[in-house]
Amino acid sequence: MPEALRKIRVQCVINGKSVSLEVYPMARLLDVLREQAGLTGTKEGCGEGECGACTVTIDDVAHYSCSTLTHSVRNAKIVTIEGLEGPNGELHPVQQAMIDELGPQCGFCTPGQIMSTVALLKANPKPTRDEARHALSGNLCRCGAYDNYLNAVMRAAGSDENLSRA
Image (cartoon, rainbow, N blue to C red; front, side, top):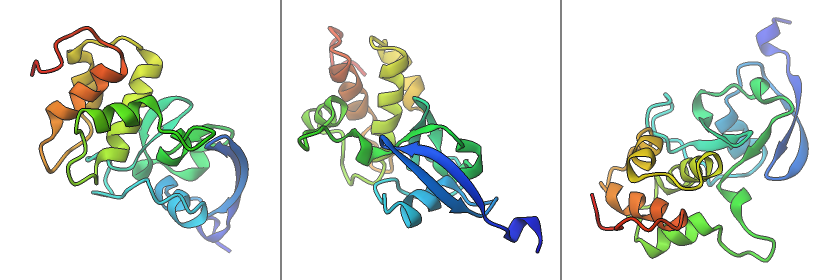
């Protein structure tokens, strides 16, 4: 049997739970998360690593799951939008900030925007607006709600910056 058709075992942690997955060598993380793990909050937009809708964190760094092969996340800690839920079902502070700042319009890009923000704030808890803009630059929003998303990043960071500044 050709190697590409032989499944391999991948151990990792998804949303705090240790999992063992049987995947094909070319299986995209996006597909495994949605189809095997049942985590459908991660969206497929372009399927080419261009839009950011499928963003998850891998070891606290934002990654496009559509262009990440599952075998490359062996022993990694993966967090999806579903993994941000608090122990009693409460929203993550970034999710609440997105709501407070009216970030989501149609909502399709929102999981990716949130995951990119979570990764940014983990690495840089007090980013400037320009640093936040750079961190979210890989996330496309067809509704054009970029300022709302940036305002939400600044709110989540507890910034003293004027939130209405574009």
